[in-house]
Image (cartoon, rainbow over all chains, first blue to last red; front, side, top):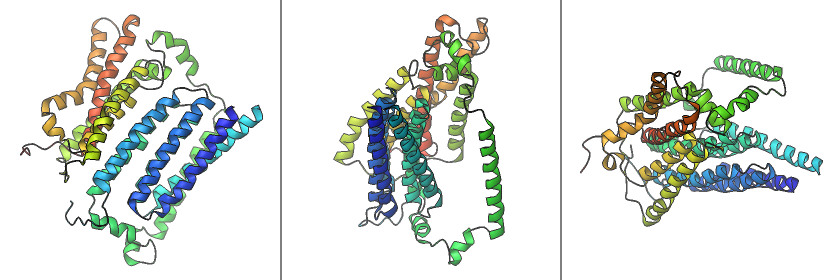
Length: 93
Length: 326
């Protein structure tokens, strides 16, 4: 069963590597940010699998922190860094 | 079956290392700052997985909270403060074959010297690493032997707050100095704050109590499992950052003096407990056996509050501004 969990975790990690293509290509900033958010979700799944495979229940806490803090990053993006294409900020110093 | 487990673990670790190296390369080499930030966030996530595989869940927790979460938000806020024009110029500029591009790059000879020095440094580090014994227990045995006298059952917390209390005390001092420096340098830049939309407002209302709950849980868990003041403090800071981002004003909602008291609370309580121990006949930061657990928890509560407010204040990027209330 452990090998199965680890194999599944490796598959998810491969998925994550595929998602990096989206960060690299974009095209928009929102696409890149959403790819990073998808990474967060995948990492939560990997951590839950590793918690079983490695017999370390504490890893579930790590995944909890991941899930909670991913939201903070995306709020920071929407509120601070995101410039929708239709809107022009000329003086946002 | 055992062979299959080993092969799966090996495949996972190899993938992890390759992904990490590639992400690090992308973070450093991309001309587009925004892309680098997104890659940095992804790097933090994968790095936390690497810490998990190295069986260091405490570090993984800290990396998850600070590396992937807070630092990403901090970088995004910093990026928005750079002039929009400069940002686009950086992204559009070709690295080579352009006069403006060339002017920012050091001369070829200088670069060669840097490359040689980096290679030398890397080679030295690699040699040092390879010369270490493969299975070094370090101080694990001593910590395990003395764990019963520390007042807590998580060896990491025992080391951080009892056996090596000095280190943690000085770290609290560093955080405190960082805020003092940031507040001395500049007032917090004024951000164009629009009122949050209905989605963000309700999202914040749901998420911030959960962050507070998680911070309390991590603090409590730290005595017997991975967790503790730094991890709990970062989650607390995330809640504060969320409120700041959704338009809540630190200054308007929290008058100045309680803010300052909480900023200094962790360091203050730590030093005070150390001094009280000296007064009743122990050494500085040496806890009597019966009260060690309670004292450590007290220090950690104060430290969590301070770390949370400190990191949020650093996110703000300067001292909260006076007389701006309208």
